[in-house]
Amino acid sequence: MKRGPRGPRLWGARTLPDRRSHRGADPRDAEAFGASSRPALCSAVRDLSWLLSRGYAPTSSLKLVGDRWGLTERQRMAVRRSACADDDRARRALARVDRADLAGGILWVDGFNVLTTVESHLGGGVVLRCRDGTFRDLAGVHGTYRRVVETSSALRAIGAWLGESSVAEVRWLFDRPVSNSGRIASLVRDMAAERGLAWSVELANNPDRVLADSVDIVATADSGILDAGPRWYNLARKVIESLGGVERVVDLSGD
Image (cartoon, rainbow, N blue to C red; front, side, top):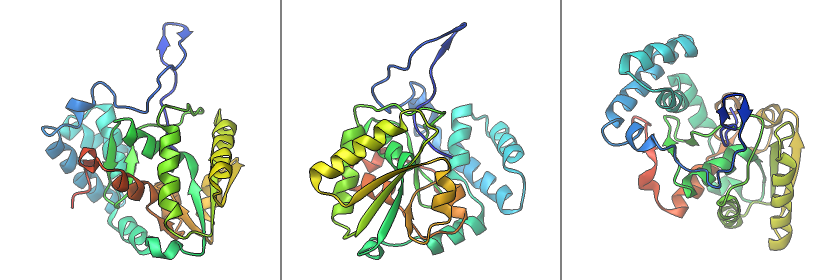
């Protein structure tokens, strides 16, 4: 699932424009993901992962677990994104590569997936440490992407990390159907040109399929892509760890 800002707020029959300038926290997140809520959330992730490991349907399993632990909708979203079946976790671990493996090769970057996670961290939003070792945020691209104050800083941080990784070529891929995807693609191209980076940017109608079928290494935390089996690099997590503030990441990994 792609991630990014929530859609516009509805008030009666009128649609109000989304004027948020940060990929920040929901006002309720301090309570929902604070220290007092962590034990229930971690237990819920373990319970859901147990059910998924035994073939139970994700939707009904999440309802069962969420009801048992009295979770809000936003907490349930976090639990679903953090949990995974044992077999999936093991396969993802085997396909994960290290930074040294990037040297001299091509890296495909799942654009919205990586970018919005780093933006969320910089903006003070909730970022989850998930059971498979990835970092995921709680935003969601629902047909549109909105640039925020942290966008340029996030791109610079990603560029700095990749610049020290000896990658021969970085290919960014964004969802063509998402509104403003052309604008963010242009921003990435401009930054690459200004800094002399070996980056290219493409738009695709179905980027998940392109990335899932890639013979090159893919930077993503999208579970559907990971479960298709490409070699992948944990880019968003590595960049966030390099930025500091990792103590703010909500650890639901169960480790």
